[in-house]
Length: 117
Image (cartoon, rainbow, N blue to C red):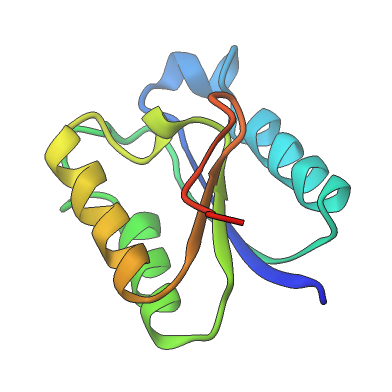
């Protein structure tokens, strides 16, 4: 059975928008990862030019949290754990939200997953 997945991408500065960890690069990695793992990518949420230090200013992040707590999805994919945030407290709270909602997490760059299977 194909898993329903959402993705999240973020860049924190104008420089990253123009080179390196671009939104498009992250989107491409997420799309390829989902295709390779037979996952149905239903949406990719994004925040452009916004620091990972504060969740309050990240509308894409907040929309993603709202979506995953109100819809049936199987997981979320990010290019890198650092795209979620720069504060460990925020990342841990995010992981707790996923666990409470029985949602898997996949980080491509670090090859991390909370999937026990």
